[in-house]
Length: 399
Image 1: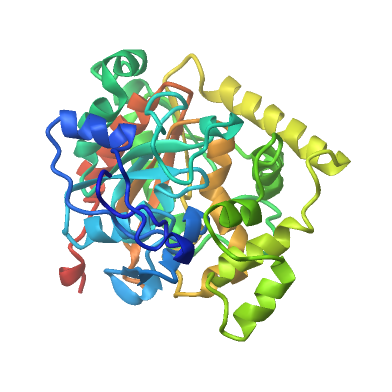
Image 2: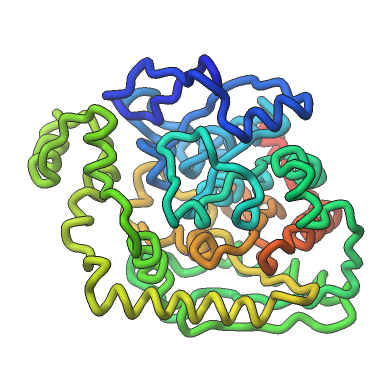
């Protein structure tokens, strides 16, 4: 946003301000939106907890001990705390949807090539641009549609047929309760999330002409490997190179880890840890990477066969558990793939707030996936979920 900070929480970028609006901000201004603020993100927008060495840690309005998500966690927290009504986020691995889930609001990752990603930092202009979505984050589901219309522009809105009514009775509903045979770095789906998903499915089944149908994809077991292999399948820079290009003095991942241990690093633990991890992940030329890329393409086709060319949605957890405590995501680092897998499958997804957990008293929701350019189905189902289940709750009155 012109004139405001664009440091993305990186110490070496302290004080850097944008000299122009990103394309999405230009579109929102044209629609009459009044910008209020730039909100906090994780360092270099790479992690699902919004914490950095410049602006500190974003806290969850429902419980200050808990994570607000990332990388658009500041946006999610501000919306949940009634500091704003609407916001714009970016999502390449769940960075709109996890903050929406943790903070009990709504967020939509659009189909590829609908909303321009131009003008963002870090800039993604290679093959991964189709995995990155710039989209609306809203306290109320009914604001998603007009926001997406404003962000997308006339031509893209026409492609999405956003002005056409959706007959929910005609929609086919498919769902997945949990990723089977998950990695040890993933949490089991909590009872609160499982029960919430079940209640939404039960309601939609009563509304539609055909009962909801469970669909489990064996390839989902390898969701992280697929996401990572597809992300790294082209000529993209490594994180350490991106940090260096931003002015960081980081020289070697292991040296930086020693500096972090001694409290001398200017980077957060997730950023340092990921630079170390990059040295051990299989190269894009390896047999395993090629195998997971192929598996990802097969999974993409399976979802296309399920959702394309008909009015159908796929429901699943946005995240396996309500907002975890601060600093704990490193122990369950792969939880993000419930959201992230749909970035590399290039499908539109809406994270829907449903209720507060009975025991956790934290927001619990689900995500709604549709076929490519069928965003209107996600939005229609989100609006119905809000109407029936209530959606956002005022965190000051949660008791």
